[in-house]
Image (cartoon, rainbow, N blue to C red; front, side, top):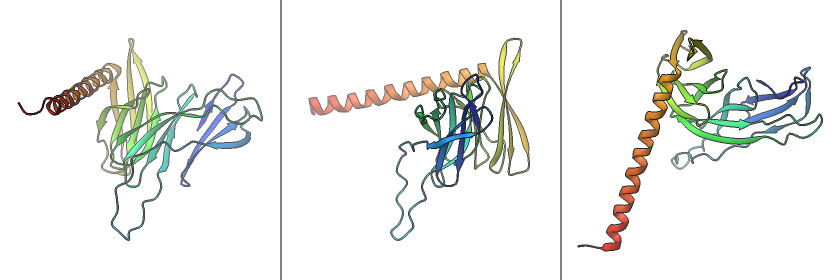
Length: 232
């Protein structure tokens, strides 16, 4: 994917491959590649489940798919552990350095586990607000792009999602998102979600996480006070 970085048309090419690398390449306006690419660092991931003695260790995590919004300052990349889970990594590519200079503005902004199954496709909306992810189980996930929190999960396909496109539409000021997904079941599906629906889902998720956090704090406080005071 090409990510424009300045008005002159230069920018970045971001690539993923089966060699467990995600590379960012400096590109000129005419498409010429400049210098040596920089590898996106692998973020810390949970340790894989232990395997029985004598079994081969699991393969390393694999970069799988990527999406670049129109602004070009950020790239979203899918990173799968063996058999799942699937993570989304947000990479900031910054402003293009002078010609011939090393890539120095590459940084992993954040990453999050978003699915128990491996991710197979990604797409981002033109306004950079919503990220769509398809899974090997045929699921479609809509995520809040800035926080990578999951807003919507539906099952449009019976097999893996092969291709995704996310279109932003406006009708009398209201913003909606149309996710077009194609799957291994030879079907293409349209999933619609309005910005109001996504905002409600985000608010509900925040309330749920807040309630869980408060419950954990209350439980820890009760245990701490119980140990401090002893039996009554």
